[in-house]
Image (cartoon, rainbow, N blue to C red):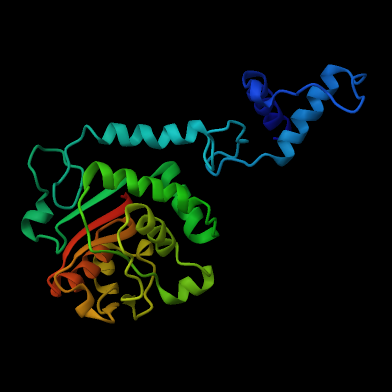
Length: 273
């Protein structure tokens, strides 16, 4: 495996002039060129950061957290999906040309609109799980870029507040950080929308939604959320932020509380299954 990474790093070194050895200093010119090159390759292999997606070394200037290939993989899925028809309400991918899906026609969600950056699969799914459960906080910058790109393409409205979906308090203590709140802080600063955190809270510890059936997910979150100061969002435009949209139960439950206060709610997530 080490030899494989050395070969990859050597190839990138040969194709990127910026990484090639400069003229030697301090009288080491007698060292053979191939030995200096090998030393440089070994140093790169040891000290260069690795891609959070595939594990290869990041040797190009523009690479940060993800290599070019992994970024292209996520972008290609988005490009493909951009040609598909989606429900104009919940954002579900449709196999027909109607504006709304059957579920939204039968029972309209409480929010006005929901959009996801991409599908919850493959590399993006892997990165979200790494960020949430392994605490690699540097990924929050990458995910914030994705949210902002989605906001510019699909929303581009003014809002009174960004409201992050609160985590389960028990699981959050284990992780020692709030993954959605950390992203929401960046979005608030870059989009210049005030962040309203700590108002929408989770008051009941529940089972992880990913482990449940669709029917169980609906009952699992009954009475799980609360607004501490409902008057603060009365009549406001709210940008509701969460990571993954599966059945939409979490977003729906949170949006219901906000809409009860006559708030206008638009929801954004990183991925939907």
